[in-house]
Image 1 (cartoon, rainbow, N blue to C red):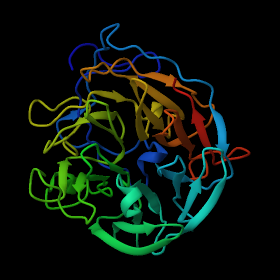
Image 2 (tube, rainbow, N blue to C red):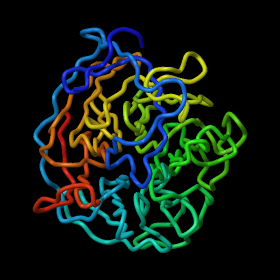
Image 3 (tube, rainbow, N blue to C red):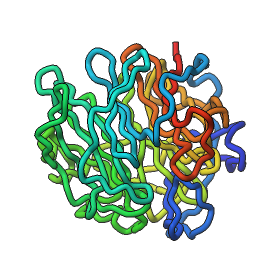
Image 4 (cartoon, rainbow, N blue to C red):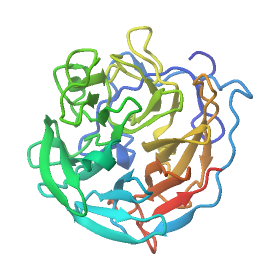
Length: 380
């Protein structure tokens, strides 16, 4: 993306072309705290930006959010079951909850083996696209020695716990953790580089990657390197979503200068830790757009009603990013700035609305009465 340099305020205008973010972690501080210390390594620190052309995509504003459930403790992942109920993870308590569209919540169980330290704990959750037949669900969590993905049978209760991927690097920061089934029926998982940037470029490491696998944890057919790795060169991806055309997008934490929204393509290298902001120059894949970390620190991502929706932690807002039919992104629009505090997960419900979780009890927010909560945001 060439052109004018992005201003320090992203609320008025963001960028929309290519950029690569690379950043070495600040000691003891994670992306979620929005640290401003530390040094970026490599060729580019910052980048240039141009605004998207006017009229490239239209964005209908969302409706007024309503609280569906309150008094939760760091709800991290949301995944819907057939029929409209959702499974919700709590990062620190390791509880797996079931929440109805009417707001009734119950505890499914406490996931064993979770070690909730720093940014780790019980993170992502996914429901098999064949759940009506196989009753399988999947969770991503931090254990004593690693991050791992464990499959359960859920049929009124949890049973048959089966680790399908182990040995994902763990740390106090940058554990990744998002789980999503893609439109191809395979399971995708995002992993962080735990503050060790070099592992993001090491294709033999599971850290700093997006992984793609079968329900048994094996490399999915068509993976570019014959391993679980789908893409690499990531710092800490915590949001993944697909458009109706099958394009995959992911949000990624930067360090000091640029957070990213990326178009995810098979086998591509997204540059970390070599660059932050623009700077791919053909060697790396540049992002579609960036934010200043103070305005974003993006976590969950969903597609609904013609837009991508990114939950911002440090930015304390919901970003709406309109898309055109050919996948081009329009100018991002900040919604609900500061109103609900830190936002963690955003998931499209079967009725087309968004479920958005707050993360004000994660040690980096300011809890309000009723926090943490699940919000329902109408999008049509």
